[in-house]
Image: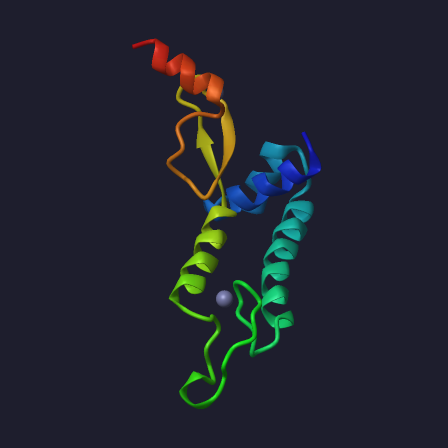
Length: 128
Ligand SMILES: [Zn+2]
Ligand SMILES: [Zn+2]
């Protein structure tokens, strides 16, 4: 299993509420490793928020008009705000079970995904 895929699985399992011990057992890693990966992943998110200085849109990075009532704004407009939140959702990994082959797979931003691959989707469709 690729390292990055393993990390995504750790994050996905954790988001599902599994304990580090359970995650460790499933992936054949140590609980300490799972904990480190997860806390590092969540720390990166926070760090990014801090690095981006006030005065720039969190979505597109354009300078913001921070005068008057706009002092606390984080985005240029509603479009940037919703784009930013959509991106966040899109990158959240979820563990899903393929309805066709029964394998666990990682789906990004869609906990209701039904198939691990296009092949499985096609196979499931052709069964009628
Ligand atoms: Zn923007
Ligand atoms: Zn499948």
